[in-house]
Amino acid sequence: MGLRKILTVKEPSLHKMCRPVEKFDGKLHKLLDDMKETLLDAGGVGLAAPQVGILRRVVVVDTGEEILELVNPELLETSGEQVGAEGCLSVPGKYGLVKRPMVAKVRAQDRNGDYFEAEGEELIARCFCHEIDHLDGIVYTEVMERYLTEEELNGED
Image (tube, rainbow, N blue to C red; front, side):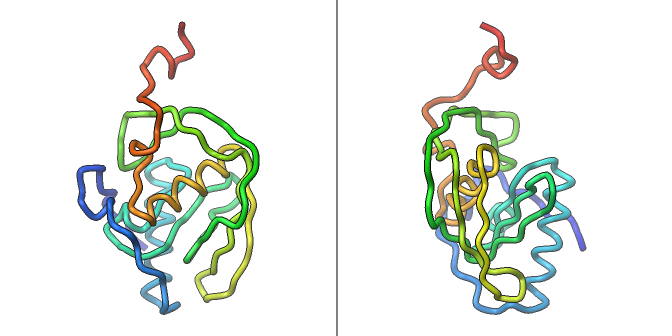
């Protein structure tokens, strides 16, 4: 396993559509392992392959209980609404106000190509949507209402 460099928002590859994964092989397994290690090292909640320079539909999400590996993920359904602070490892030190669903259900493949579904609420729902946006070349700064100030982030009036 190894740490990968996380690209920042100025990198053109972060704004490109990712291709589906078709080969479920050792190369994919290494990417997933490296992405999990990189995510844990960076202290994030989610990481998408384009953030480490790979234009494939691969995401890892730390649910707090496990790290989900989502290959070729797609949103199946969403419900509710939440508006709140959102950050990104590719936009270090900045947070924006973003509207996302309260609940999101995804269908994806695991590292061996088997399909499964996962559902998340609140932060995990936000993360599913945020990371799938990355796979479509969208960074949260393109869908946010505005950046949040330091005072707002610290809960000051």
